[in-house]
Length: 95
Length: 277
Ligand code: SF4
Ligand code: SF4
Ligand code: SF4
Ligand code: SF4
Ligand code: SF4
Image 1 (tube, rainbow over the protein chains, first blue to last red):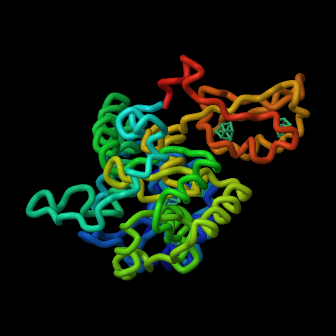
Image 2: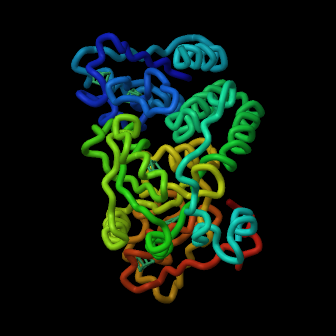
Image 3: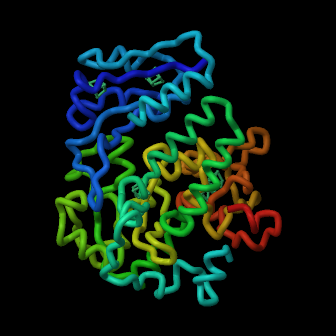
């Protein structure tokens, strides 16, 4: 069953200043990804956010949820088919 | 010899051919639509973030065929623009004598996977004339570069090898090599995506490791050195084992063997492995 991991980037303290979820996750699910793409330049570290790129590897141990100091992470396990959920997550990642 | 050696090797290994380090200093800036191409966005070109998201979506949805198509299209482009290949420690040092200039720069993968601030992340090596650009515009290029002498770079490669990091060459616009990466699973996006999603952005090296069972004393030192899940321990024989189909020929296992039981052999001396990149 595919978990749906959501990071609330409006409360998250940011990957560089906090990054606790990234350190604790046994499956290295989280990465610091750019929020926008600059033409002809690298993304400024300030423009990085945490997101669960490798969600398909999550083992639903809940460690990230427990460690987050501002409760920015939620993990939902629901009834949707894997295919529908994967499309839904992909859309959110892209937006 | 791989296909890149055949085309760009001038009779030898392609990454030991000095011509492949002699890129022009200035590129002509493309206009219009073309300016939005892959090399307009070093971030996306380097880490293939959008592509790996697509691969994961297809895989999580159980759409195997779609996953294969995404990979094939992405790799057709990658093998022209940006990909990596594993090399050995000796070769890394040889390259530091061929390529100029050599500079330490921040590692894009470890920034993404460990969120290291740039000033603590000068762990990647860039080479060639592109480095002058990095020096000139540090705000554009992740804090710029620190130039190194070949001697310093070789020492850095030794430190990386001891720490257990895989050496690789990185292409920026075939056939030009612009990076000498020192990487690990799962921090390195290239290694991770290769191992977890079979996305062949990083190619195996020209060698495979072989164990001389008579020399192996079963000390197990080599086993945790392998990033590519190729090593195991034969419990009853009390010897280390290597799955040569999986071996990338990085040589990290060999560096720690106290009895020199492990040697790197040319991949092409095994017909069954010669086309397994
Ligand atoms: S639940 Fe566990 S495996 Fe899943 S993302 Fe959180 S820490 Fe990682
Ligand atoms: S632990 Fe919470 S606050 Fe810290 S980086 Fe992760 S999501 Fe953000
Ligand atoms: S390939 Fe290796 S050294 Fe290069 S950016 Fe990625 S992890 Fe860093
Ligand atoms: S078996 Fe040795 S040479 Fe082969 S990939 Fe593993 S560590 Fe590298
Ligand atoms: S390090 Fe050498 S001697 Fe020790 S187990 Fe590995 S191959 Fe055998």
